[in-house]
Length: 334
Image (cartoon, rainbow, N blue to C red; front, side, top):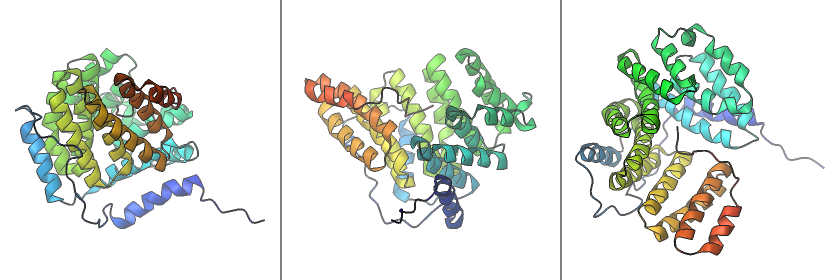
């Protein structure tokens, strides 16, 4: 009996990178509607965010083609992320992340993949070897300072270092400058000032849009969502989350779009719109299943269970809770 041929994981992972290079990152897409995923009529928006929200929707409507090295790197980063969710392909994804990092050692995206994803696969030795390189070991340089802040286990110390990085942000490339701003905002939101996190991200948005297109802008808005929730600005958070999902759709990234859909449903629940949240959570579960993203499916089941319980549908809530993996991490960050 002939066994069916299975493409080795490393070939699957590296194959998409080759396709990206050959296609120049962008492909011709069918015309897609980028209307808001939910109705935002009647939901007010603050003067602080209104201009940037309007600019984001205009950018989406124009459907401009994002180009450049930063866009290619961002596309590769986003396409590689889902491979870490599959046990079969995660080791190959880690190999790819370290290969990309070795080839472009100053790129913060590859450091990010190695730090947050690959190290969880017992790749600490490889990570330490990269950290020992002169690119990262010298804390007098902007890269070394950033690495020190990222690796610092004390949250308040990490925040202080990332604030110093932000003061020297002009030493970064545009992509790295925006990426570092998202890392600072995460720390400001958790251990500093959520209001300051919002200010940092609002400042970064125009550059994110110009240098990284919808992929990078999506990242900035998604980080801002955390700070808006922390400051209980739920109306602004809903506008931000909805435009983020539309940007992910425009970028054509199913994995990021799914995360954004979960974020929209989560906000509906936080605003007390439980039935709408429940309906959207069920859609998210189906999409997670179709993409075989068990971690995201588990997280969605946990959030759905909470919303079902809030409207007295306790039987369904118990069934959903039983489908969670117990540990699924924070799918929205850092």
